[in-house]
Every structure is written in C-alpha cells, then in structure tokens.
Image 1 (tube, helix red, strand yellow):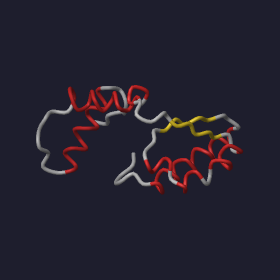
Image 2 (cartoon, one colour):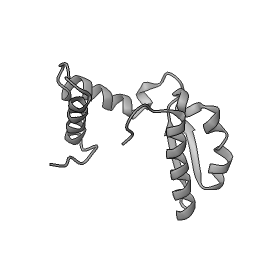
Image 3 (cartoon, rainbow, N blue to C red):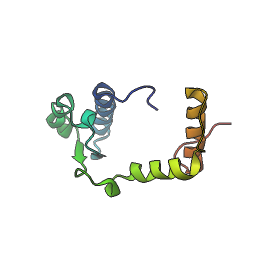
Length: 112
C-alpha cells in the first residue's frame, strides 16, 4: 500500500521491483497502465528497454477508455455503494472505511 501521493518516483520504484522479480524468476510480466502523467513520465520511459530485457513489459490503455480500466469500475462501486456518504473526521477514519470496503470486495485481507 502506498502511503501518500502517487508520484513518478513511487511508480518507478514499484516498476523497478517488478522488473527485478521478473528477471530473477525468468518470468514474462506485463503491467497495464492508464495514461496518468506519472505513468508516462520521461523518468519511466527511459527504463522501458532495460525492463524489457528483464522480461517486464508495460502496455498503456487507450486514452479516454474508462470501460477498459478496471479500477474505474472498482472506484464507482466503492463510492456508490460501499463507502457511506459522510464527512470523515480524519484521514485514518477514511482509510479504515476504505480498507473495510475493499475487504468486502475481496480486494484486500481485512485484519481484525
């Protein structure tokens, strides 16, 4: 789980880890990304050839195709049905509600 803002540096660190694992396991790995600026940054683009040599390939969804981006469907369900419409007093309360909702969807393991 990423704490804080998603940046190109955070994405780079994640992709570097995935590339290393793909290379060590000699396993073809394909990651599908949307067109967020931190996914398409020059910092990320500069590593594409190296990652391909390590069996990691990035593929980008076409622009303006939310129906192809499964996370959009998930967020829609979370906002519409699983997260009550209310004001959260602090970030930790929002995080707890979000983790509970994701647990209901089976997306994360909820620890009691």
